[in-house]
Image (cartoon, rainbow, N blue to C red; front, side, top):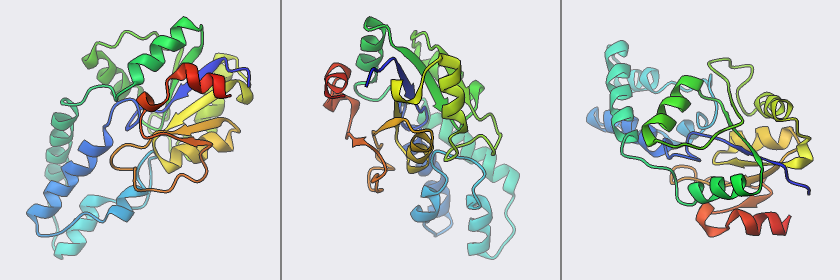
Length: 219
């Protein structure tokens, strides 16, 4: 491979937003005497518009109508509180520094929103100059596991699929990258670490386990 670009997912990959996301709902479920169904929750990771809705599901378990607006607002506030304790995942800074040294183009490719991504990067004071941030911005038809976001990123960066590496932490993300015919490295977070990543070309426990220079040599 003649690698010219790196495509990174955002949530759960660059920053572990997934653990706070699950924990914020788990706390609410447990207050009501129930457990968040992890198999159902896993379907939401890395995408948007899935059928499982925690607030609706909890109401069904309780057999009562909950104040959905208040519940979701409370959960969202707790989620953000927990995320504010998170930093870039180990090894990410080194990957980005090496990308700059080697003149590789970089993009964030996410089912999330631009505003969300940019706010988190600003909070971290992260100065990496991304060549593109490609997000679904609420459009279910663009979200992973569809390849649309990755194809858009390739087009914006002027790359062929065989000139890029995608980094993902979720099965939906891996499926999107592979559907776009891009070599995909899975770097699961604590929430997704128990899931199978058979479709990924390579699985790492952490970016720190394999420096980018070594990965490029392997390819």
